[in-house]
Length: 207
Image 1 (spheres, rainbow, N blue to C red):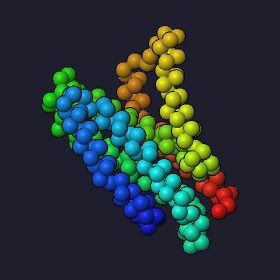
Image 2: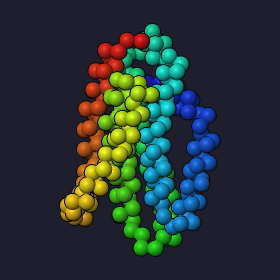
Image 3: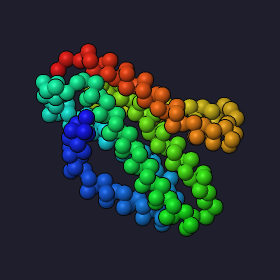
Image 4: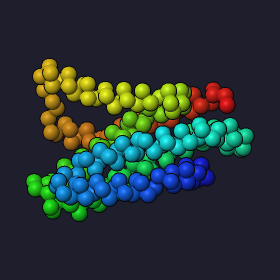
């Protein structure tokens, strides 16, 4: 599995400098505006797109056909993509935590607990999107699944719009905090379900 993850990281090497420049830009922007939310959103999108990029590279190079001619098991190929996604999210969470700790003294009315919970919620939300989306990726491929990803991103916005339009009361702060603390366990359970579904799909594919 280490070899598969290393292969994916090397395939992303060309994007490394661009990603670093984007990170520096948004850090400076966050400092200038005293608002780190856009940086968190940017990292969340990147954490979603990077695993998709590796799958796209695999499709173009016919990697799966080659990999399955080796002793590598199909389950290992699938799980490696999930592990890579989790590693990206942990890295992004760590970067955001450090940046927020540095910028926190310069942001008015900043609250450390709320900041950490927001970061945790963003990280878990990104993994939740991937847990829903990854089986579609393995089933239909990258190109056909792009519209599904757009729908997954649009759905929460549509729901929040309906809630606002229908004047449905939002959960109180205590419930939201409890949900944020419980989110790692919930996300882990959904990821395990997603992995099993993806493995089942990948086992039936022919290359």
